[in-house]
Image 1 (cartoon, rainbow over the protein chains, first blue to last red):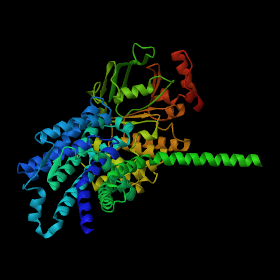
Image 2: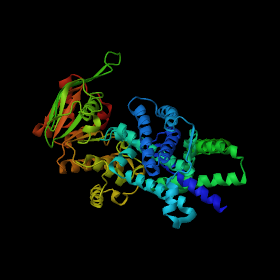
Image 3: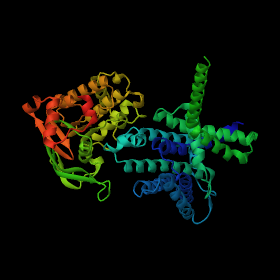
Image 4: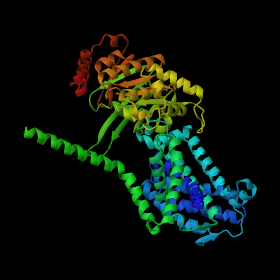
Length: 307
Length: 266
């Protein structure tokens, strides 16, 4: 059991930058960024390729830079060429499949055999951490990413990005260029997604062309779980919620895997239902309130008639 | 400070909906002028503001602000030196950001020479607090509250502060009290007067309240059909009553002043 929790924690922290990215693109900028799936694989592919070439450390910033490019393409399509934002992400994501294959040397998976990765190097250096060195490293990187994002969102540029998603009317009349802020926001978000891919690739010593499928929905579920527990009022809370949600999701996943309460093949459907319900919740709640009000009003008027 | 030469703007040209919103309009606003603008429905008041702020480019003519030709400068670039407020209190602030963050954004984007990664300092925060307390709405103790929790009047007062926290070259107020209840509107107008006059800010204000138009500022424009038909200031202006103004409009244009809201409020 302890092993399961440990693995769940590690995976939760490894994948946490993606809900963090969606916190920026989906919550703050109000854009459902479909680039995420392909961008995750891109990050993993770049990082593994660099690690295979003997540069595991360089692989991380290179993966993030690739993520920035992917985000830039999506942003360019929607801010300059009028492509609807969801479609822009889907198009980029589709094209990334080929790009990812190219990065992986036209092979559908790449394995790191007997190659040093971030994790093997760190385990040797930080021998005091023992079996927890992986977790320590991942926790540090993810915490750094979250802290960086929180700091960034308090700068002039960050505040402008937040205002862009919050009140487009205000932004149009102020000296913020919404095209620019949307672009920067999507670039930063995708660099975070790629960072997660980069870590996962080296952690698992492999990258598969299909490893990103559906990751945007899972990350959304993580974000929603975290927000339900911690709230989303401030940037700090939102960022922490993304990480906590990611860990909780992996723990739930591990429990399901272990106990088989739900057949493991059913997990994706369950995740989809959770996400759909969570996003639909405010609408459902308003509808039920309205029906209740209508019912109460009709009860009252019939009471009057009786008198 | 602001010089407009012969600008024209036609919307939907060549269609049945063609509308000449501004036709050959010229004006010269001196540094520190506080001008009130009044006019009939569709006279082009808001269009004039949109032209100055750069929401669209004019078809003809040119606009100079502080000696610089801004005719074809993009909206977000000129708004660094142009403060703007709308009738709708929801338009000027970001609801899920706190009062402090809204002010920080307004302050940082208008300050000269700040990098994109600049942040506000403790001294700036203290300055925000002082400025907020001048509004007399208790907002200085709620700096970490999201703006979405504030009332319309409070939001409009905050927007006014945001628009003027770094003195703009020109401030455009488009009926910024029209959506507020009379008591709050009065308060926001008083605040506007004290901030604009106290800071010697060059300001243009659209209003539908004749009395307000004559009591506020130092100059009044009367607009009709994309033109400025009357430009009064000085002694001539101080002797005017709302009735005189309606009379003058009739003489100049040859028709009744057609603005239901003006007539209701006089």
